[in-house]
Length: 465
Image (cartoon, rainbow, N blue to C red; front, top):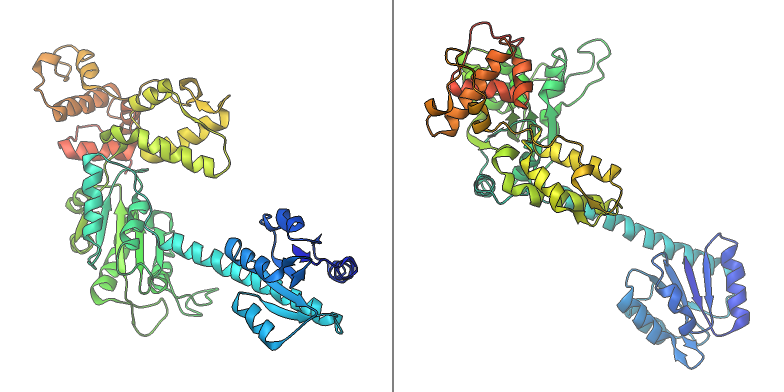
């Protein structure tokens, strides 16, 4: 939008006619007071000001615009042009200076067009800077529970460290968010952050995706640098590293040890400078024992270990996370005042097998279906309480001889109750791991991890993996 301020009606109409022909949206004002509404419009890009506007001063209006809306480009017009006047206006922030009457109408048009182009360029540059700043800024990790505070201290301690990092956590706990925080607080924060899901890559193309390939290396190959080289100077995030085929693990180990990659079809090695942050929901140490993961690669990746606690182990953080997700929805234009006490109590009772990701989905779904700006328990798309309580498990224990101890036989230990729940679920499901996990209200990967934790491996366990 273009604002023209001039106290001469004929000049105002002439400028309006000239600029409308170029398709500009115009506001014509005969005084500074008449221009107030336009100056408050966020769409205003350029202002053309006469130096003498009746009894008002164009210079004072120029100063006001540059003080209140410095992003607006101002073109000054005067019938009493002088070098001193022009210099004074430019020094006070004017984009250009035009002398009246206009002998060359084309110059008026080109001056306004150049001012608009400069305004758009500066706006675009600012948007790009904000985008880059957002990408380089460490993501906010929500939580005040002791385990979360310990996690944040670990990330902070890695600021000046270049060691590889292994992140361990269940699905939905935010492993990539933690990896981005490690990158954003490190000395490599100005470099790229390149994520890759190892479990989503077909085995036939993993090597090419990671290390690149030369043109003609295989049918249809046009040449690609690979993710290792794309992460040069930054961080390569290998998510679900436990899904990497054993045949690729040796090649990955060599790349990490030698700090170089050999593209598929290439004749020479190419140096790479990066940091590797890997993540998994699997127990890599147990996989090493069963020869499903290389021991040397495990120790190469596991230099610094970060364990993300599941949400059920930090339920005190649920209100903070709920508020964070509500604020996020507000920024997206969703009208929401808050969450009612009964809904918050329901959220605090839930076991959250899907962790923080499940909580975010529940909040988003509830907001989509809620009948008012306050979220209530009835709006939540979840059961009342899916948590497996040790006391309930013990009271529902099978009769003596069924393999599940009664309440009095259990020591006062959470681990003992958890082991008892696992044993009972396995017995009631007939050794079917999927059904046992469902009965406990947890994911199958979490179920396997807990089996390994308690050293349980019962005969007849159905384990497709």
